[in-house]
Length: 577
Image 1 (cartoon, rainbow, N blue to C red):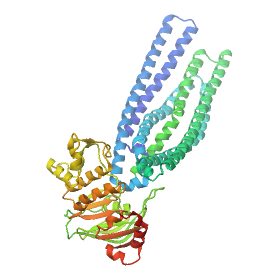
Image 2: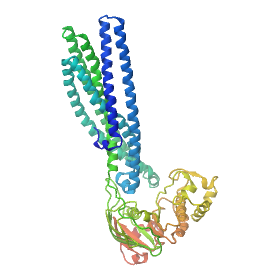
Image 3: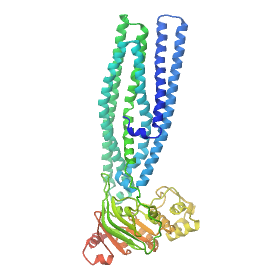
């Protein structure tokens, strides 16, 4: 029930020692609570003096208060540990995702990572709050009470000892069934979160293609399957709780009948029988509490296991450190024998197998291919966002294992399909690569990107606040902000475009073309696109097909024979402008 990896978390062993001490004290005050209550009742039954009843009742009240005081301290300690540890795990998870980048997102799914970071951490925190307290109560309180019951009445102790294994056996049988259902439910929850987030992000494209209603049915199917599995899991959980309650109630009833017969036959005094009957429910209470929260702990354990798998994922960090350099007309990159494959299941990304690719100077390189040919994967690899399993890479004749090099990534500007704009002012968004840029420099970059006229119409100008993801402004203006970032980052001479105009209408794209062509000057440009008019602006073209380079060369060279380039152009001809 407890993952062994928990003991490697900071503060876990100290927490267990503190809980063990508090739970032991709690076990004894429960024992005293039952003892003094039985003593008061027996004295009352035997019509002894009032003082012999008041004194045990006062001690009972003290034990009762101490019990809840210890419970309160226990809860505060566990909640503090759960809060700190879950936040620490969340921080590690986010750092891991940031370090691994798009490779992990493609393998695990965006929805899964979001679910793990948000709902998963909440489940883990609840798991921490429940599991340690429940397990400690179950391990310490029943044995302490059972020893005392044996001291009072051996037959009662034997009865309770026999009943517990039966209860535990039923818990194991039903628990295994519940665990299998919970595992299935959590996997379906991951699938649902991936489908939902991907559908939400792609909703504009789905609506444009007229596929939104069809995809809504897909979401409904996945959601309904999750509902069905949730109900099956809850059915098992409710059944296990009912079975445990029935067994413990039956055990207490059998014990009560046995003690009643003993009292009728004068086999033992009233006090041992009464104190045993009072402590019997307390003896079973930790088992019942654990069973009641078993489903919640299973969800938390599954979430924690999923997070641990992500955290323990091998890190493909940069194995060499590229020396600082300036990209200029004489700079070059040589790529040979590059291989990369996604590890995740259910993903549509194409693996890479590149024999040779050379980039140099201020080339303008177009990367083309049909959807799913590997354009984005190649762009991500060159940008250092994903790390190949194997590659022979040289940057200015210096050999590196991959492009995940700080000095390489500091030389490039990345412009994706969906611009990342954070919540803040337009000026701060433009200054993304250069936070210390002067206002005059920001305004000049905005002017170069054709953004100044739009900003002039805003009441707050450059201080206008926009939402995360660019909420409040059009897609074209979002791309202009991205271009302004690139103009402002004038020390970065490598531009990587991943179909930046794919989601824009033709008029908006043409309006952006002029500032983009201006930006191309004195830059190495790597431009992935499916629009034919951009190919005319390229010096060199790389044709991707199923993760490999089918052809490469200048547009004129590739047009002279009926190869992959010509075939692709024919297929794309309907998009030519």
